[in-house]
Image (tube, rainbow, N blue to C red; front, side, top):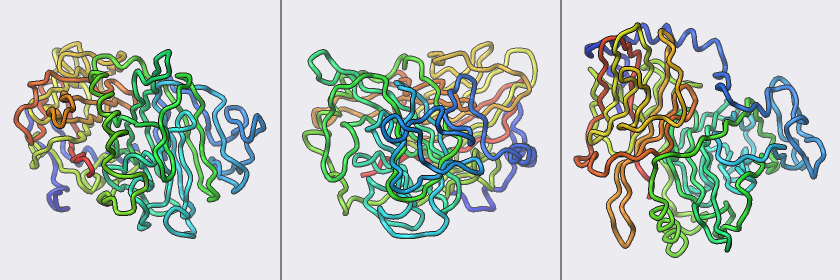
Length: 435
């Protein structure tokens, strides 16, 4: 992690144009006027701050009994959980939440709720700011399975965001798992899970096995007895995943997780994730507002070497011609922000859907990179892959690179920009896996 003096320097010196952070700061001032980015094109808004009854059920098919005021919905304890009227399959879910400003209780009794994708795969909501609990039950955990890579919780009462990329499981006619569920989660713009293979639904104290269900299911928000608030809830269906990891490798990982889990569910001695300051919301746009473990790409190259990592780039096209800009991930895996007429290529693989190509408008691209995993203990190898979000839209979902593309690791991240591309900010941070 860089110290503040180093982090506050002005980026310059790349071929093309990497504008200084003074310009980036002006950009941030313009962005600060909005409390949260608007939903992207194609999103289905489920709560806009005014009414729950149109898109949600409470108990049975009754309207929700939660309190709605000032643009948020607040849990009324014992009123019950709520669920969407929509049944949804593969999707990008976005929501914002705040634990009570008045701190009461501790551990699981402090600001507890949960986002239950398809009513069973839970991302935990909890006040985990200075509040210790078992690792796979803290805020941002895939409950009972995977702690977040880092703890990026804001103080109680402050708004936080979840972006959840979910791939629903598929089942064979005999009820066996054809494809397990997968989940990627960003909290406050920081990646805390990347393409995690779920071993089944979330559960307390014991591991649950999959039970066959339809691909499309409602999402639930849990009433756990605490007055947690929610706002700005939407989802966007995900297109088919395209070229990604071999399903047989995922199934092998699934079987290994069931047969010999590294940690029991809710194990109290499981190591806690590191605490990292999340930076500004909704997206850090200046050097002073980066996540606490991020480094600037000085002269286009990160001062640290990485394996798994998150890269954030703010950039724009400045005119016609043959523009080019590439993020070189550890080991030489390229994500081409722009290459002539093409946009957002992972290697030579195109995005899941056409990205916007507006000249002059600032673009924001987040890249989550996973390094290759060698074969070990009977488990098949996994190739390097990247998930790419561009202006809040999923362009790649664990898209694979050639297996020999990331041979020398760890390695720095590089950004190379040619004429016709301007980059305001570029940073990278580690996504080291937890024990």
